[in-house]
Every structure is written in structure tokens, then in C-alpha cells.
Image (cartoon, rainbow, N blue to C red; front, side, top):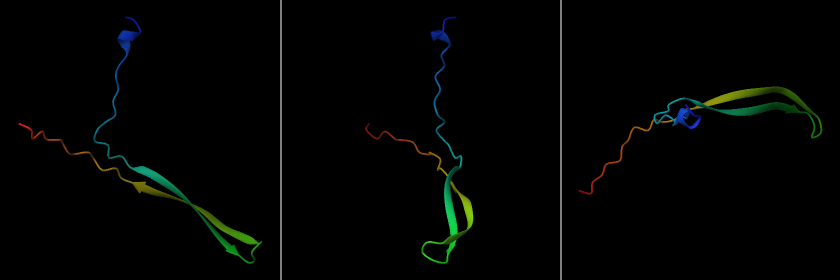
Length: 63
């Protein structure tokens, strides 16, 4: 077998409903003066985004 005969074509799945994550950072700070700020905490929040499944077909109406 040659190298070209072993190649396999891969395609992405059509109905992907896996969650995607959008990460947001929130810095909570308490400022006494304009030049002096006390950082309270840093919070990492994950916002899950669901991907809608592609469940439609195109219909050919030209007959």
C-alpha cells in the first residue's frame, strides 16, 4: 500500500449540539480614592452556549 491509498477523508458531524463555553472575567474592586483600589476578588464565569442542531432539509420544488 502506498501512502496515498491510506488517506481517509474526514468530515465534521452535521448535528452538533455540544455546548460551547464563553468565558468572562469579572474584577470586583473597592476604590477608596482615584489612585488607590483594593481588589476584592477575581471571578471567572463560564457561560454555556448551546448550538442548535441542523434539522432541516432543502426541498426541490422545481418539477
